[in-house]
Length: 142
Image (cartoon, rainbow, N blue to C red; front, side, top):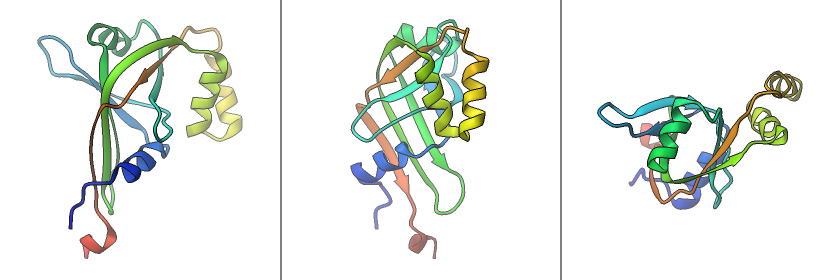
């Protein structure tokens, strides 16, 4: 039995609120890999918020793409990774609040969004072009 997820399974999995790991190439060194909050809706783009001066934003601007992987590290083990070109937009307060609400209860999300209201952030959207995914079912684990 194949453990590769179907397109619908991997997109549904990536749409769940996992902490993602963003990877972007960098010259002369191993890729930069950092944990990130992200947003994704099936069929859409992966969105990440960050400072425009962050190392990841600078590297993504330079290479024009990144990879994001999300995983479940307990049985049944699953992961989905998407790679593709990136585009930048200025992030609004509503973008920050929506991202925070994906990961935090409403009151904490508002507090987080308020705490960075005066900071400049960018919304980096990646259009998935290539996918890798695996998902074990409970039956496969026996």
